[in-house]
Image 1 (cartoon, rainbow, N blue to C red):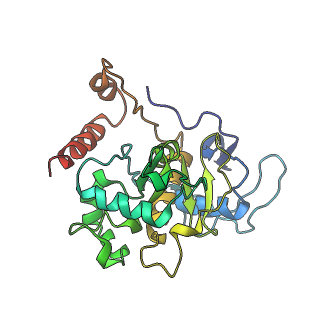
Image 2 (cartoon, one colour):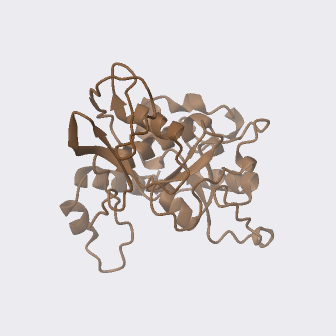
Image 3 (cartoon, rainbow, N blue to C red):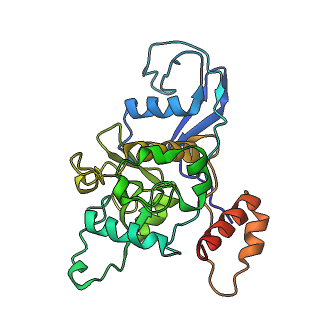
Length: 278
C-alpha cells in the first residue's frame, strides 16, 4: 500500500479562520528556515496579497502583512517512476554524468572504484523524469538546456544538464520527491522525510554546478523539482509514496490497480517499457 507522507509531520499550518483543519505540513529536520517556509507557502497558497504568518503556540509573527488566505493551490503534482536506464539513448547521459561528477553530488561520497570502471551503487539520475518526456516537449523545457553539443534526440531530455550522479538509495528518494535541492538558497538540500543519511542542510556539490562549465546542471530544472517536492509533501495530507519493489510472484498489477493514481501509474509504466524498444 502507498505510504502516507503526512505521518511524522512536526510542522503544520492552518488558516486562522478554520483553526481546526490543517492546510498541510511537513517534517522539519532542521534546515528549513523561516524564509524557506515562506517561500514554500508561496508555492502552496493562492492569495491576492502576502499573508500574515504567526506561530500558533508562541505567537511569534513570521510576517507582518495581514491578508486572508484564498485557497491552497490545485497545481498538478507530476508523479514519476523510479528512473532506470532502459535504452541506448540514456547511455550517453550516464557516461557524461559520471565524467562530470565522479561522486554522489548530494552525499559527497566519491566513487573510489571508478578507476576500475566499477560504478556499482552510483546512478545517473534525471531531474525531470524520462517517462514524462511528452510534457517536457509540450512545456518546451528544452529551452532550459544550453549545451547544444551534449544532447540526444530532439527533446534534449538526456542532456546532462537534466541530471547528476547519485548513490542508488538517494536516487530513489530523489525520484520519490523525498529530498530536493533549493537553487535559490545556496543549493541547500532539504529532506522531506526522516533524514536517515544526514543529508538535510548539506549543499549540492559544486562539481555539478560550476558556472564556467557549459554542461552544469540546470537551475531551472532544480527549481522545478523543488517545487514538485513542496507540492507532494506539504499540501494537505501529501501525495502517496508508491511501492516500487515487486519481487517475483508479487501482484504488481493488483496493487497498482487498487491504489491511487492507478491509471496514471499504468501509463507511466507503459511509457517506460516503450522506451526500451524505441
